[in-house]
Each structure stands twice: as C-alpha cells, then as structure tokens.
Image (cartoon, rainbow, N blue to C red; front, side):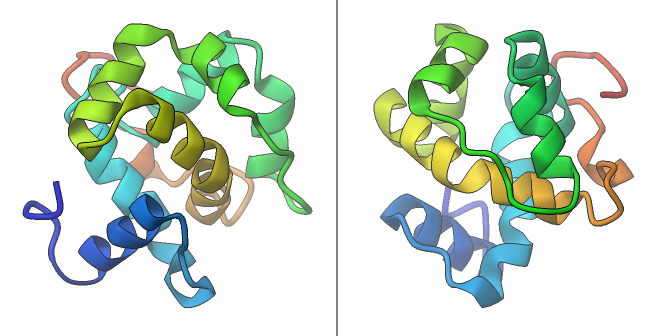
Length: 137
C-alpha cells in the first residue's frame, strides 16, 4: 500500500500503521483512509460511515461529524458493525492483520471523519462510493 501512496500520504499511513500520527499530519487522515477504502466494497469514508451507522454506531458518528470531542469506538464495536468480509478487504488494502485494522480504525478513523467534515457534513470527495457501485452516503 505504501508503494501506491507517495509523499505525505505515505508518511501519514506509516504513522497510522505505527500507531502515531503527529498533529500536523492529522488533516491528511481522510485522504489516507479514502485511498485505503476506494478499493473495497465500501468505496469511501462515506461508505464506511454508512456501514457503521447501519451497524448501530450512529451516536458515535454524530460526534465525529459535529463539533466537540469525538466519542470513542472500540475495536469490538467496529467488528460487529463491519463484519468479517469488509474487515478482510480493509486489512488487505492496509497490508496488516484484521485485529490491527480494528485497532487502527478505532484509534484514527474518528479523527479522519472529523477532519473530513469541517462544517459538520462529510465533504463531497469523501462521499463517493467505490467498486461496490453505490452512490451517495
């Protein structure tokens, strides 16, 4: 995956995989997750949010999109909401085991959504769907 991403996105992905993203690079998180998700059935941050919402995480998502502190989400909640197939696809794109994907998503995805929704709504570039063929989020 890091071969696909160059420059700052590659650096941010390395930070995500190592468990640390410096504050000055956090604004790049949506682009990193967008690159990871575009080759999955979820297709985008919007696609992942839709799946999480359908999986019962609407309350947490609302805090990520809104102002204020982001509500935490546990790896277990993510696993229940996403299911094995989606997690395997994300793990394949990231090149790490599923249990690490859950850890990284729980740690970094809320901030990625926060960065991708500066006005409380997901930016258009993060709403489009990928190979799943759906549109909108």
